[in-house]
Image 1 (cartoon, one colour):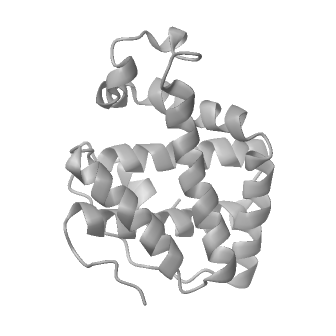
Image 2 (cartoon, helix red, strand yellow):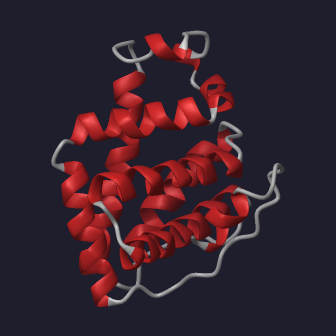
Length: 179
């Protein structure tokens, strides 16, 4: 399990250290792209599975979604806001996967994720919510894509890199200027 994702199982606070950036090998990028194609081929269904599982496993996160804050979990699917929120998560990962194929230095990933982090920091979304979402994404991908150890490692490395950029944005560190 990745650096930050593993620690999330052990900690109940929101004091997560920013993980180190890790280079992804060509092989790992191929694994990420191939496995994401499986999940994204059923985009909306996968999005809703990930989002529903996230809210089911970590129900305290439902409170940040005003549109369905007080809707019972079993009634969420089909409510206004559920599918669009689920699809936004998928869109971020679609953009990240598209970006790493052509940008192994991860400048595109940084730009994508940094913007998400800045926007969500204004809403006071805690780091723990991202870690919990990462755990769910990894579990769903492992199940749907039948990830082996190499696949799990590749996704953990990508998630650590994503958390690195998210935590920079949340903590007000760094910047995201590109030429």
